[in-house]
Structures are given as C-alpha cells and as structure tokens.
Image 1 (tube, rainbow, N blue to C red):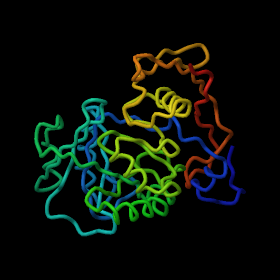
Image 2: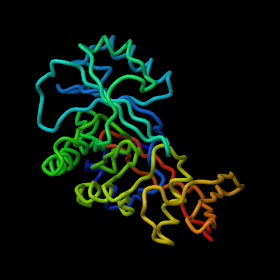
Image 3: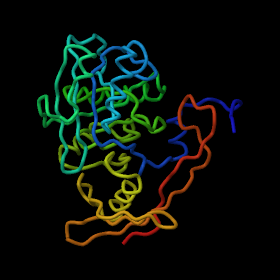
Length: 294
C-alpha cells in the first residue's frame, strides 16, 4: 500500500507520535571495524563517492566475510581529510569487550589489515558513535548531529559521528562501544546521561534498544527483567537459555542471587508505518510483547 497522497513528516517524529517501542530493536553486531572517513559521505558511506568505490567494495566484502560490521566514523563538525587512515577494531562479545586503534597510510592499505585485533593499540576509552548519516536519512542528520554536538562538548575524544547503524525512525540513534549498546531517541533523553551511566557500569533503560551481540528476543527479555526487578547494570541478566515456543520465545536470564528469571516474549506486528523518511510504502515491523515473567 502506497501513501503518495499523505503529507510528509520526519520518520522520527512519526515514531514518537506512535510510541514505537525501542526494546529488542538493536541490529546484530558482534565484531566491528570503525573507519575514519572525515569527508562527506554518500548514501552508502563506503560504497559511494567521495570514498573510493572499488576500495570500498573490496573492503566491505572482506569485513563481512570475517563476520564483522563496518562503520564510517568522523569527528563532529570536522571535514578535513586526515593525513592517515585511522581505524578501530571492536569486539562486543560479553566478557571479551575490547577496542584496538591503529592507522594505515591510506584506504587501500586497509585491504591488508589483520581483522583479528592482533595489531594496533588497545584502548580502555569508550566510543560513542552517533548516527549522523544525513544522505541516508534526514532524521539522522538533524537529530543525530544534535546528539553528537552535545556529547562532543562533554567528551570530545570519545565522540564520533557514524554512518547508518539501523533504525532511522529511532533517531537520534547511537551505539556505545565496546559493548555494542544501542540507544534510540537519544536527543530526548540527554546523551550525556547515557555516557555518565556507562561510566558507572549502567544502562539507561528508557532509551536502550538492546545489546548488539544478543538476539532480539533476549534483548527484549532483558528489558522486561529490568522493568520488573530494576537492575540497570550493563551485565545484569545474562542469557542462560533461549527456547523457541509455539507462541514466541522463552528466555532464562541469570541473577546475582544464583537464581534465574524466565521471561516469555511474543512477536507482534506493528500497525502499518513508514520506517524511514524516504519510505514510500507502509510496512509492518516486529515488536516484542511480554507474555510472562517469573
């Protein structure tokens, strides 16, 4: 069903009006290559000009073959090309979280970069990657740059704009590395509050979409466990078991008291909606509802 006659409105405005839930919407990402591309980005930051398209195709193919995700990053407000090509390899697996930084002379040299994290300099500093990919979606430009500017004023060395991370309608969106914590509506929830919480080993539940290394039903189950029991630590409620049922999923999560909590979630289809600013067709997206917890 098309909606050519409907008035246009930013997808993130529509999502807020509908109250689109955030829980269980973090896209999958276990290991990452972050690549500094300080100039402007095309619709696909690493496959379209001004980035070298041939190098981009080879690099994306190589990174994805290694089971990794790749993001372009740049400092907020800066557009001067760096003299070297800076990169970071991030591991978001629970218990293996790490960031390693390095640099090469130019983009083609990245095709020889070891992707196992064996080279470069380890860093204990988090990375706050804020989607500001305006050529991909208008909301990412408007809301994302607002988030990046607020964070950069407080944490200039830890803040980066990044290319598309998924979930345009949740703009401003951001990912906290190395843990792969996805947040949405961050411009409504004070992004500095999210960074401050991370320093204390906590998440901000009302803006958290989920952790990228976990399946969507587990992300949703953790959300409902936090709602019920109030433990906002990043590593709270580790998944112990995930079982598909006739109606959805049964997820058993760990607790510090040596007990566990079992959460049953079901997938529901949203009302028809426009998922991006450029969308011309209504779609239904998956949302996760709580069936039981105990």
